[in-house]
Length: 245
Image (cartoon, rainbow, N blue to C red; front, side):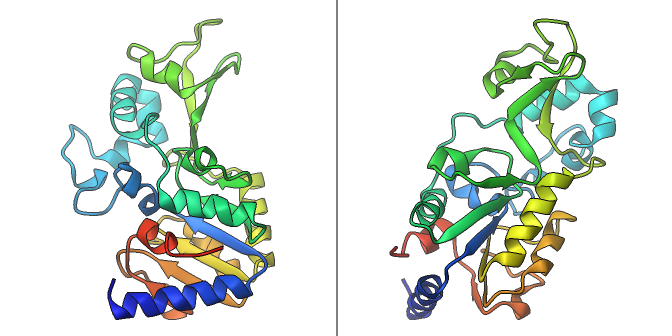
């Protein structure tokens, strides 16, 4: 650990100690240390080669028009049901358990925050663990989708089963967004981690923060760095694991 990193950890610790209502806002970088690829890094999904661009395959239009290709990509790259939480997820859950953190707002769909023990999690882009028949609305878990052949079909009515994830061209859930904004507005500390803050409208939610401490933990620089009270360009798991609660 460098002296600079050590000094930033001390400052982060001080900010957390002084805060009563912390909100954690996270993106793909929170889960990369668990082995889930992000989108925009060198090894991310957007830099891998497929028959179609990933952003096209994850669109509502593609889902409707080419469901076989959609689910082939989805099961291969998005449905990581055997992945375990990393130190970042665990520390965030510990902050909530100790009464320091009011909620998690995540752009991720992997469910790892809940697996680590977090209770109040607002999933802006949905979850791979929730899937519903488009006809009768029967619920199915992620394993059902994983084990299905081709396009998953409802075992009751024969309808197509759609993952409860927000695809490109689809809007965010209004209730989830409203709750997220409320908690950001009420917090005295906002920790943004593992996100480049370029995915809208999710990234725009951080503009509602009016509290005391804004912290950015991300490997790469973001457009909001100049607005933050503390910027740490390190892995988020390695960073948060240094915090004592």
